[in-house]
Image (cartoon, protein in one colour):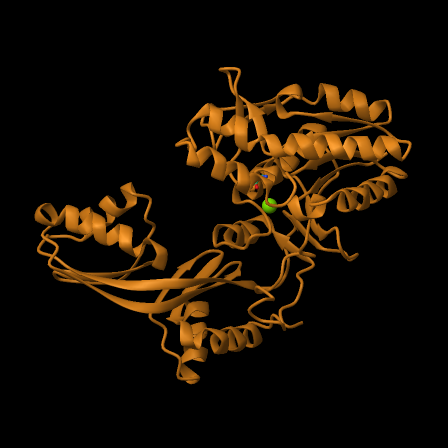
Length: 390
Ligand code: ASP
Ligand code: MG
C-alpha cells in the first residue's frame, strides 16, 4: 500500500469547520493509502504568539521563545486527531519531541538532525492516522525548538523522508505553483511540474508556496512533493528531480527595491557591503566606479542602512548617499541559462523601450531590474516571450 504524508497549512485548519473538511480529505486518502499528517497552527496563531513573546523582550535564540511560538501546532494536531476519531477513525496527535524530531539548538531556526520513524510506522501498520505538529523539534538540551517561520513544510518533508513515503502533499490556500504571482498578473498559469532547483530559486525569491529549507531538504533526500489547495480540487504542482524539457518555468517578482548610491573615499566598496551584511542587509550591487557605487536594497531597510552608514561614516569615509525609489526585480526562472538567453531577454524589453538597470545570471535564474512603473508591462512581455502561456 502506498504511503503519503499530507501537510495542512494555517488557512486549511483555520476553524473547526476547516479542520472537519481536512479530516474528510484525509479520510478519502486513507481508503487507498497509508496516511501520516502534519499540521500548522491555525491561521494567525503563530503571529500572535510571536507578538506576545516579543512584547516581553524574548526573540529567536531564546529557548522559551520557541516554547511559546511552537504551541499553536499542538492545538491543531489535537483538534484534528479528535475530529478524525469522532468520524470513526483511529488517530493520535504527536508533538515534535514525541516522535522525536531531533534538531540543533538554534532556537527559532533549528536544523533537523534526525527523525525517528518508529512510532509513526507502528501507527501506520495498526491503521492509526498519526497527526504530527509541524514546526517543532527537540534539542540535545531537551528543549523544544522551532524550525523557522513556515517550518511545517520542512517537518512534512522530513517525515516523508523518514517514512520513505511515496509523496509529500502540501495543502494550503493556493492550488499550486504559478508562472508568476496571479495577484500581480491574472493571466498567470499553474505549472504542472517543476524541478527542485527551480522551486528553490522561486522560494528563495519570496514565492510563498514553500519554505526554502524544505525544498533543499526535499532535493537532498529526493522527496517528491505535490503542492495543492485544500479549498479547490485540482492536480496542483509536482516538485521533483524530474527534468522538464522547457527552458523557462516562471517569473519571481521582488517589489519595493530602492537604489542607494554611496560616494566614498575607500579603495574598494567591499568593506561597506561587508558591514551591511553584518546587519543582515542583503544588497545587490548595481554599478561600481571609482569612489562610488550603487546598490539595490529592500526599501524597508533604508532607515537602518542610513543609521549604520552615518554611525560608521568616519571610518568608512562615506560622503553622500542618494536614494532613487521604486525598482522591482523580475527573476526569470528556468534551467541551463546562458549569456545568450540573458541578452535576448534584455533586448525584448529594450524593444518595448523598457530600460534594464541591472542583469545578473545564474544557471537557474536571470535577474532583471526595472523601474516599478514598468513592472506590469515587463511581466507581460517576458511572460509571452518566454512562452509561459502554454
Ligand atoms: N506556524 C508556523 C508559522 O506560522 C509554521 C508553519 O505554519 O509552517 O510560521
Ligand atoms: Mg507555509
